[in-house]
Image (cartoon, rainbow, N blue to C red; front, side, top):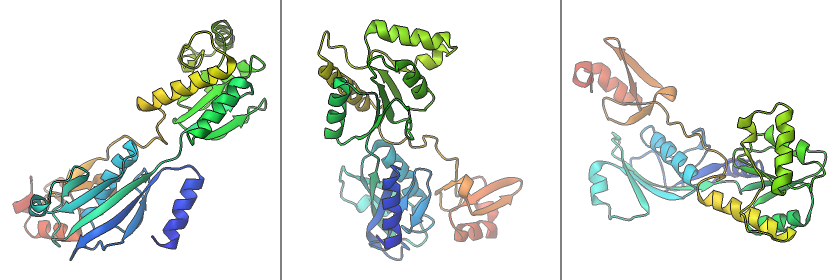
Length: 305
């Protein structure tokens, strides 16, 4: 990886943004991707660096988004159907057929770099001390917030836990509800939690917004000590993450609108397609100028494919 990409990766890490590194670990010419070619890919599909040509890049971007969604690294083998038929089966390798006219083939290693889980704790108490200690043991990113309620930047993967021991629960929960945090919990007794929710309801807060608050926070372990409440909250957050909640910075889930190149049958992202032509009132999209030229020479051969 060159210095520019290293600096970009470091900057994204500092800002707690997800990204993925894609590295060509094997290539058979005349593929434009060479062994050691590296790119940094962001969740929106932006590519920094170089991993291959018009056939390989859209496939790598699609697989990169999937890898960032599940957080699992993977090895891609990109080649013709004949190439794939000769590849020894390995359960950890994803094979993707590409119809590249260069007849090249690539193996690309995709490694997602996702931010650590983010916990924001408002208040200070024995439960908070346990909660923070356990979260840091799990290598979560933890921010402590005081009565000024200066909540840092959060995302749908952030958990905010209010634990002020009744000193400023109401404004703290209200401030948390102004964010897009994926979890908002209140450490309080059932009676106290009901009072806080009632106060906010009387201030005109909708039931939909109030429904975001988990109160009391944590797994019900019965009558336990304050320090043990912190354990119950961490246990609940771990359980939620295991169920697929609060896992990393949200990756766009919408799939790009794609069209099929009528010449090579590769999928083409319509929004970013560079090679486009029209024939008899229909628009056709191509992965590369060569396919577009072949189509325009004999459109009747490919139209309607």
